[in-house]
Image 1: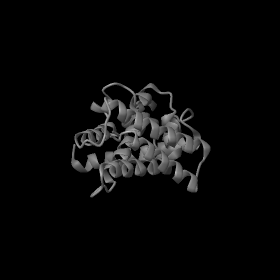
Image 2: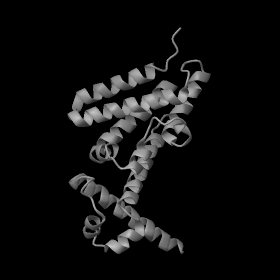
Image 3: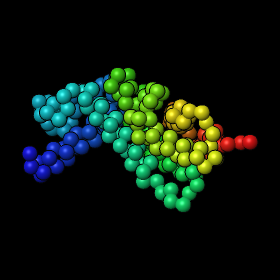
Length: 203
């Protein structure tokens, strides 16, 4: 296959995913169907199935796409010259704000009942740091803090998982209770200070 053809396929695939996300937000995940999506993008179901074998494959692609957004947020956060505490704070702050900007899609995916989606969004599986870059990045920062003698915890992966779950919990409550403005900002700051404080070594 020529490079130009591959680029066209990837471009079309991206367009399908973006329209699927919009349809999910408008109508909900349960009512989303391949036929509805095909009608929306003026494509026959047969051609749509060429890109995604079924609805579950489409959902997996949306989750995977969202996960890449998460990694992009974390990697693009400017942490140059920051301490470890400040680095972790900055990355999670950027992540929380990024997810709140995408809160409709975030809520749908995090509460989805599909096994394939649940497998991609799980956070508590043992050994997850070997599979999930976001957990891996935080584990690396905690390990570095332990080497410097400023963080202490017996199990780095478990602590990283609990920190991520705390962040997810806050995002979920902010979305459900529609907290905005100064209160939202105060809650985010307080949560991050508390989570980072849980890593500190205290004699």
